[in-house]
Every structure is written in C-alpha cells, then in structure tokens.
Length: 455
Image 1: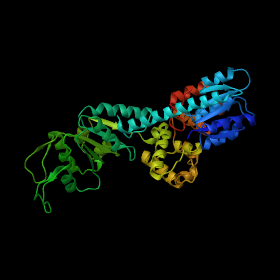
Image 2: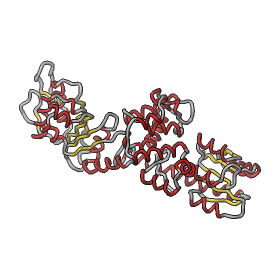
Image 3: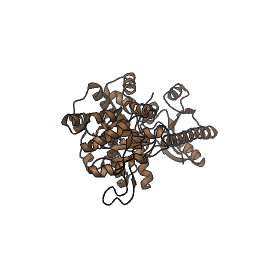
C-alpha cells in the first residue's frame, strides 16, 4: 500500500486532506510540524508527501531538499495558500512532483495522489526489471558503480571475447570466482563447462590426479579411468584458485600443458588435446615469489596474458551504500524480514571501516545485523562487536591519504551525518551550494541507497 504523509500546520486542512486520501485507499499519517514529519520519515519513509510551503518550524523548500536528498523516490506535492505560486514553481525545479493551491479540492487532491502513485509504481516496476536484467544479463552478480569497478567491467567485456589466459590478482572476498565466471559466460565458450579448482592444501599427487586424470591401474586404488578437470572443461574455462600455493614440480607440469595445449593422464601414453581457457587467481605477490624462487617466472608469463586486479572494498568505498542496500534486501528474503535500510550513523561506520574481508565481510556484517535486529532499520548496536567498539577517529588516524581522498571522505561523512541535507551540509562545510555540488559530481558521491546525488 502507498504510504502518504500530509504535513500542514492547519489542523482542519490536514485532517480534511488525510480523510479524503484515506477514503481513496492510501495509508495516511498527518503532521503539524516539519520536525515531527522528518523524524517519522527517517525511520520509515513515505511514498507521497503533501507538504505545506509555510510551516511553523521550517521552510517547506528546506524540507523538500531534505526529503529528496535522503529519499529520491519519494514524490512531494507542495501545497500553498498564499496566493503566489512563485515558491511552488521553484519547488518543482528542485524536485517536487507538482503543487496545489489551498483550499484543495477533493478532485484535484485525489488526481494528484493518483498520478504520483502511478509514477511510483512505474518506477518500482522499472527497477524490478532492471534488477532482473542485471541478475541474468551482461555481468551477473556484480554490484558497483565506482570508477574502479566500471574499469573492471570494461576489461572483463574485452578479455571475454579473446581466448587467452587471465591472471586475477585479488584479496580474499573481492569476487575472484564471480569475475572468472563473468569472463567465461561472456565468451564464446559460455555453453561449455566452467571448472573450479583450489590449488592450496593438496599434495602434488592429488593435484596431478585431479587436473590430469588417470588411467585404470595407474596406481594402487585406481580401479577405473578418471577424467581430469582440465579434460572435462573441454571448450570452456578452468579457474585455478590460489595458484601461488601450487608446488614447484607441479608448476613445471602445468607450464608444459600451457605450452603444448595437451595433457597425458597419469599412467597414460596417448596425448589428449586441450581447448580451454585458464584463469589463475591469487592473493599473493607472484613477482615477489619469483624473486624468492617459489614461483616459476616462465609460468607467470604464460598465465599473465591479461591481468585483472580486483580492487579492495576500501578502494571503492562509494559502492558501499549500494552493496548495503543489496545485502539488506538479500537478507530480508533469506530471513523473512522487512528491514528498510541502515541509520546514517551506521552507514557512516560502514563507509569508513577498512574491511579486511572485503565484500564478503560486508555481506556477513549485514546478514548478522538483519538476523538479530529488532528494529526496522539497522543501527550500530546491530553490528558485530568489532564494529561497535570502533570510533571514527580510528579510521582517519590509521593511514596518510592524498588530500582529494581526505576531502572526499569528509564530505561523504558530512552528507551522511546531515541526512543528505545539502543546505545543512553547506553550513557545516562552509562551502557554497554550487561548490558542494561540484565536489559531489567530482567524487561521484551517492545517497543512502547508492543512487547518484543530483541537483
């Protein structure tokens, strides 16, 4: 059901408007002051707001700015009883859906609500279709609009069209498997198998048997012929995770396979031709390992035809609100809850935490919070203990950063703390509105749902 707020200091007017809209099927709440409305809006946003231009505690245009900064999808209809439509027209330029003159006629009131509701439903349907397209489209599973991720998307699209080996350099939790699958699914061998193998923690004999397979009787216990993972991926892709953990003698065998494009099963004598793409992934510094003599330089260059270096989450902080929104929705479905999002204070902590476990850690934090919270928005108290005991000063003292990065983080912090109220943020920053918008555009800052902030 569409939730509608009526904000008017005239008791008779707001009760009359509320009664009419309620009879028309909307869920209604009425408010006599801006502060009481904004407090409720912060905990559970309204879909449509009928907002008086003149309120006792705040100017209607300032309330509009606050609402649109925090909740871009909320439609606001300005109501004026002062004979002049100048401010109302200005409000439409600042994002208001439309305006009405007092006294509001029943027909006009219902028609305006109906049109706003239709726009909201259309937007929701478009978002549903967009999400569905993203989940089954070009880069399935990826969440991110940062410059770093857009560059990764571009590289994936390009390398997928060329049947070459790829080296993924990435920390744990940044999406190595997701990236490898995207390269596979966008390439010409998308209908062939995608095979995953972790090179860490296995003996050379086991790795050899798993990758190359073996003939019947090749060793004790080899009762039947076994097809290896490389052979089973014919025409497709093999992801060799933790390639830096592969024993040196096994590296020699893999190098031979890459050079000859053929294998011998253990105990076999007939070479088997291979048509596969190898994607090797590592969270270690292979060049340093080469210097230490623990990784072969010739194998490194065979694997490293194209390198994709996945950024740490701390290097793409502008994607955090979007990821949080996605993980909250995902956890809601998993746990049967209806959490609306996170409080500004909680988002501020997430925006500045270093995330040693990257995206995987963020998802774990959100799952933990959604599972245990008793409210409808996640707060700092819902987070694991390691986040609850942190203070913002810890984030800014832990590293020396370029001025642009410090400015970006501070502006982002101020926007979060002010609820994305541009006027209030300008006051705190001692910065003109025009200058602030330039900085927002320069740094690609987003609101609490990960949407680009816009004038």
